[in-house]
Image (cartoon, rainbow, N blue to C red):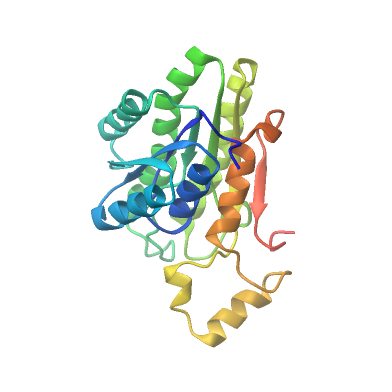
Length: 248
């Protein structure tokens, strides 16, 4: 399929996991894709190689998602190198879990700065370009815990709840310029981290989900592709849960 032919996308945190699946899907759908990574240059290079081997057009950019200057430089580089920016997917995020009574201010700040402030800064930088073209798609990866809350993740939950609110505000501000903003809230998704859980832990997670299984990064990427594509042109300000019915 080439539903995104002639479109240019930027995916933050695209070297592994959900981000990598998003990069691969957008490239497969015909988009030229830039993605950011922070520390793992080897994983980024592998992602680039896989996509180019499949015929996709992709380029990686090192970026610190908590640093305003680094973000401005990354967005500028994508626009300059790739020729514009039509789709922004804010995926990059970190966790620093702990009970709130024991959570350090540094762990709170790190998660809020990367997950929420980073989404704000990337969106602000991209919007400047999108406004001049009077079109664009912003897709923010939130989490179901941003809706439900979760013990031991006060910082992460707050960041993802903030991302949902930010998404709705962007949607209201920019709808008149044909720029949409939507959030995707994944539930339990199979990742390197969840693969390390034992059988009892895996069963406990499955028991919380009406569909009785975890989702895949590719299923999240499919939702991103829909919101980035032509069939979602009249959808904005929404939160799409990709969670097997868990929040329901």
